[in-house]
View 1 (tube, rainbow, N blue to C red):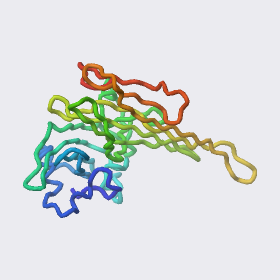
View 2 (view 1 turned 60 degrees about the vertical axis):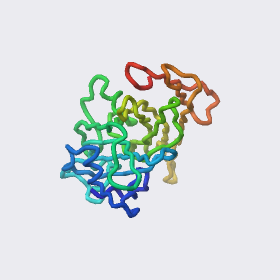
View 3 (view 1 turned 135 degrees about the vertical axis):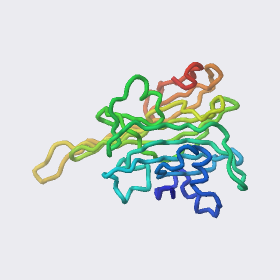
View 4 (view 1 turned 180 degrees about the vertical axis):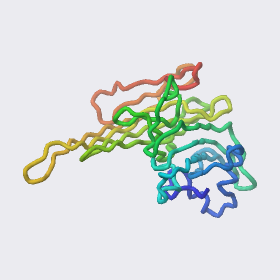
Length: 265
C-alpha cells in the first residue's frame, strides 16, 4: 500500500512530503470495510482553490497468476485488473486525521481479463459507470487511470466539479488507436457522484500499403474535444458544451442537468 510510481497525476507523492499520514490511514477513513484489499494506488492531492480540501483516488487490484510484477504497484496498467476504485473528498488542515467532506464514491469493477476487458455488461451499467469505456473494437474495458483534471468546472454558484482522465489503447498490426475520456465528479446531496462522462480525445495510427522499399504508409488522424461551461442553466445547473478543438463547426453537443438522475444527460 505504497502508491504508484507514475507521474503524479493523483497525488501519490503526498506520502513523501513529510506527512505522518500513511495510505492505510486514508483507507481506514474512506473504506474501513476494505482495509485488507490489495490497494495498488492511494493518491491524495490538494484541490486548488478549495482550502484544506483534498481529492483521494484509491484503487485496488486483483492478485492473479498473470499479474506483471513490474507493474504490480499501479492501477494505471491493464495487466493488473482493477477490483475497486474509490473517489473521495477529504478535509485536512495538516493536523490530526482527515475527515470526510462527503460520502465517497465506490465502484466495484465486474470481472475482467488481464487486458481490462469486461463481459456481460447489461442494461445501463455501462452508462452509470464512472470508469468503464469502450475501446476501438467496441469492447467494454476498465479505463486506465491517468490523472486528475482541476479545470474550473463550476456547475452552479455552490458546486464545483473536478475531473478524472482515463484512457484505453487498442493495438493493431502495424498501428494502434488511443482514446481518452473524462468523468466529472461533484458533491451532490452529501455524496461524491459522477455527473458526466465524455470522450475527450481520439488518435489513430493505422498501417496502410507496403512499398517495394520495405516502408509502409500510415494513416494518422487526431481529434480533441473541450468542455465549456455555458451561462444558461437547466434545473439549477449550468449547461455543458462539448466541441471538437479546431473544427469549423462549433455546434458541438450540449449536456443538461437531469434532476431525476442527478447527472448530465
